[in-house]
Length: 439
Image (cartoon, rainbow, N blue to C red):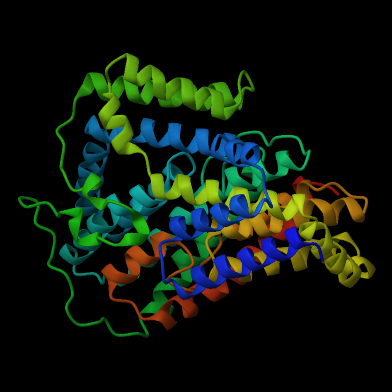
């Protein structure tokens, strides 16, 4: 091994260890690893600069600004009040409708603020209907995650895989290119949660210290969701009155961004960036408010992990890992390679951050497909699906952490509900990928 390979491998192991043992914030760990690689010369400053200006970073930052403008307009608060009224009118079916709407919204907006806003509502409305909140909070998190798999912008994982694949010379994904696979996975997962999660959760008694019931005159504060994993939840604590003009403009710009990207008039990074700037120029959101809507811990985590991914490629470590993987799966053919890659990604996602997994596995997937003389597309879509499908632990995805604290769940509750969901979505994803993305 060369010196650069040794340094890169040591940094990678150190970053993974720090993330597993959770001794420091994930974004700080990733940036520290990138700094070490830069100082050692394993990556050049120009490559680091490119990582911080990658399309994934630009897209996410711009979408955060647009979503924050919709928040500040009072639109989200209005929608939640309407959902509360619906749930109180039609009972538990209304809760499932609310959960489904959160899943649909997660295809276009970051699912963390969606769950931050919706979880207290689901909890308190369930209690007002004399229902256990535990029956609905875990499905809320899972459905939000499943909804994010339905579009390219649904999760940062999808954007990062697309970004890493383009760095490896692959064509960019379309906004709705993965929708057939994501929709199949989401429908299968949603039906499982609707039909079976209640029976499994009803076997476990509620934990003591349940939250108070919903009081329509004293709406719940979102401050009780505090936790480092989700950033600054104070952004969601204030209940804002509806400003119809700002809400209409922000929604129109958001829809325009989606339509422009879907019709391939411009890349999603360009349309989202233009939309965010337009909202500032129209004074729907001030520059200071726009900066406040950014989620720097997410953006910097992705940038740091992109630098590590670049080092893996530049030093040849990714190619070496691929050679070892190819030697073990080549005899089984591309389908078995796809199944094993999905399983390995799924396992890593339960242990590490989604960004880490995308950086580690995407270059290997591209090289593996090329060595098997098949299209890398099915393998990349498998990483997108498995990179988000972290259901078997409360720490595999940040929305799981939210409901884990609020619902008073135990660790094994997630294993009991999430492990079968992992297996189900694995099977459905492989079938849908083979149908939609031929080798």
